[in-house]
Image (cartoon, rainbow, N blue to C red):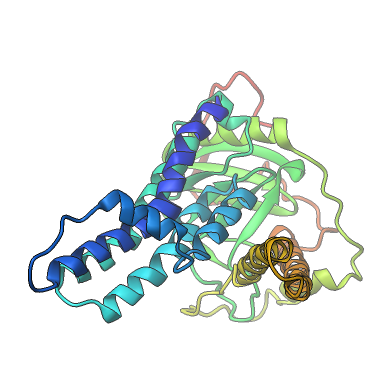
Length: 374
């Protein structure tokens, strides 16, 4: 059961987001005391750790990270990045101000330990891919041969870590297909190398071997996946269980701005190798800022009831900033999401699944107990 997986994963997340940074502060105090000249008293690790927890120094990044985990509880790819939020600042300060190889080694190991525990937590909830995982909302990550990554999310398929778009004006570095728009899923085999271009003009090298073919939302994907049977079963079952209609705004909406930039890229324009990756996900900084100011506003409310009523004004200001940045994050996210899911106009028909997509392609029958068409 997914619930039992989370019972194991949540302690790992707490260890990653809170235990590692506070453990670092405790060990730093121990190394500092040990470096003092003269007779040293026995170091009380439990008392020191308790003091660090009650001290506001280094406190804010921890609740912010935990709140982000609550918001993104299903997005396993984000857990490791969130883990760096509390650990990197304290480790950086330690590297700058620390003396001695022990303090430097501790500072360098802290973010790695936090990342490792968060990675392990993500693995616990998403692998192995059993029936309960396939039917759940938990994000499952599948690596592709030759680069790229398929993220089977709650409501859609997302391709990221693709090579840079070949057209330098492409506004997105990822593409996606919502589950409710998938029309065809097929396992196949490619016997000769090929290049496959996605709607954002990124090109992926298709090496010989098993390939998953997905058609929907006006797009056609060829994904070089080693375990094509498991990937196909995951996509089919999750699409069947979790597909949900997501109405798109009118085409004259401002949210279509980035998508229309993709549509305006003429196929006749020359495509040149592009080394400049598209920076996606930068708008998530606004989410971090929103969560941070929300936590500070909550603290101001607490102080207003336990101390001075002047904290009410701070709570109102911080609450307004939190609300505004959250709305900005949602708006920019909607614009990027539309471009990722609609690299071609929504008026475009799906590609015909009957022709061979590349030379050397052949369908590969996979027995799943269900049809290859959704």
